[in-house]
Length: 286
Image 1 (cartoon, rainbow, N blue to C red):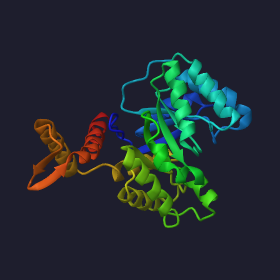
Image 2 (image 1 turned 90 degrees about the horizontal axis):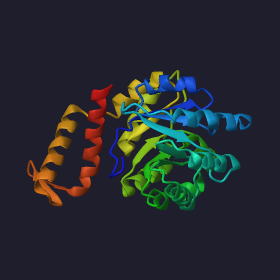
Image 3 (image 1 turned 45 degrees about the vertical axis):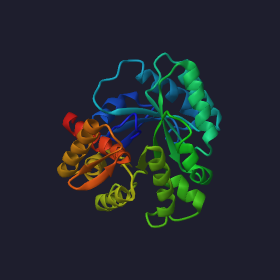
C-alpha cells in the first residue's frame, strides 16, 4: 500500500502473456493481484508475440472487480525490456501497473517514471528486489518515485546472488531489508511465491512468518494456494473494527495524534489502518 493508493495486496498470481485466454481465469482466482508475464516465463523467441498479446488485453475497459492488473516487463537493462517500454509508451491504453524485475539502482525506476510522464500515462509501478545491488539500494529505490506502490522480494534470484540456500532462515536478512525499505516509503512489501505445491502446510508456515516480519502479502504459483494466502494476510474482525475506529477518530480530530482507550496513537499508524480497511473492502467483493 502506498499512502495515496491503499489496496489489498495479500496474494498475486502470474498468467503468461502468450496465453491471453488464461487472463480471465486468473482474474477470477481470488488473487488480489494478477500479473501478466513477459519476463522469465517467456522464451526469447516468443517475447515479441507475448508483448503484443499482453498489451492487447488492456485495450478493452477493465472490470471494477478489485483485482489489481499488472504487466511484468523485462529488465530495463536488456533489449527486451527496452522494447517492452517502447510498446507501452506507444499504447493508447497502457497497463494500469508495471512490475520491474532485477532492478539494481534507482536510476532505472526514475527513467521509466519520466518516460511514462512524458507519454501522459498514469501507470503505477511495482519493483522487484532480487539482486545484490538492488538489496543494497532498496531504501533509495523505494523512495525514488511516487509511482511505486510496492516492493516485491524475489527470493530465487536473490538466493542465487547471495550464494545461499533459498530458505526462510537464510533469507531473513534480505527480506528484512525489503520490509525496512517498503515501510520507510509507505509501500506494500510482497513476498516471493512458495514453489512446492505438495507442501501446503509449509507454505502457510512461511506465509505466517513473512506476515509477522512485515510483508503485506505473498505470491502464488497455482490458484489452489490463493485461499490460504488470503486467509493468512487477512486481519481479524477485531483489527478491522479497530482500524475503522482509528481512521474515524483521526478524521474527526484533524490532528497528528489521538487518544483511544487511553493509548496515544500517532498519525503514521494511519497507513496501516487504511490498508486493513482496504482488505476488508476487498473481502466484501469476492
